[in-house]
Image 1: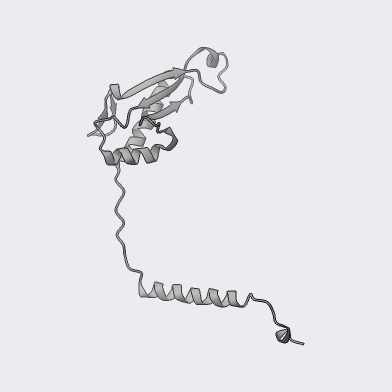
Image 2: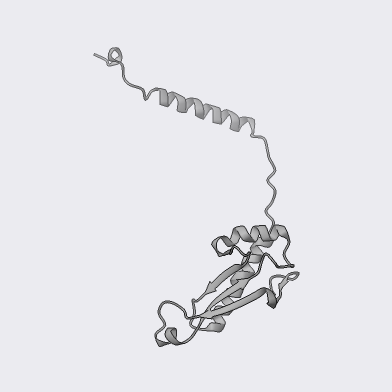
Length: 143
């Protein structure tokens, strides 16, 4: 069982782990021991998550979200299988905690009179600068 917060826990049947050999340095250990962990969480089928949380989770997971609606998290940083397993589970919990926070609704506000005037003054000045960039005519050349 994976505890996300005080109200939410993920059951073991929703999680599956697969172990493989890590890549990168590690000497003889890397060729013998399967320390890398691939954690799979069946997010789409989880009864503990609301549809809104699932939608936010899908957006946050990005490429880690599979077509079947599962999240894949791979951890192979350490040479210990147990530590990699804990790291993968903690990453998943952090991702779900982030998805639980609903974004605040934006309240539309009117621009202040001063900001409108500053914007229009800036537009007028920019237009003046652009109009001065034109070709120089013969009779205005000076000589």
